Length: 151
Image 1 (cartoon, rainbow, N blue to C red):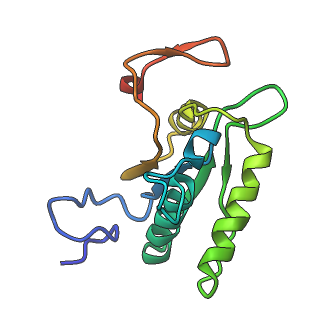
Image 2 (cartoon, helix red, strand yellow):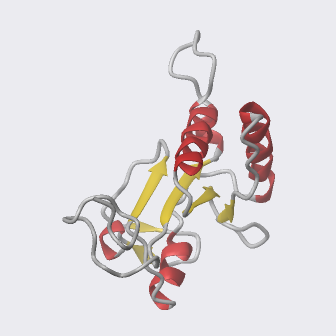
């Protein structure tokens, strides 16, 4: 069964046409530079980027974002627009370069979701590849306390 909104299965379809988008956020902060074991070939960051690109390659309406912390000069998240299906490792390197435009720490991209709520953007799923711990409430760089439950 292929529903009119592109979601397979009648239980998941809400009949809203193609307003749905899949959102994938990949943490590219410094903490993601670790490896699980000393013998590991890839870092958490590289694996997260690779998995986000894998999802993007299998989903035509998937939006990918790299995120880290925001500060006065740097954004907290950026769209990943680079995607060459023939050169996956080069894609990973290019996305790692985006990190130079973001802060060094991990901070949940609340600004994105605040904007999505304000503009009534609809999406059916978001995936986060990160090593961060989701706290009930945290004070962020914009001076506001925010809860993941508010999303």
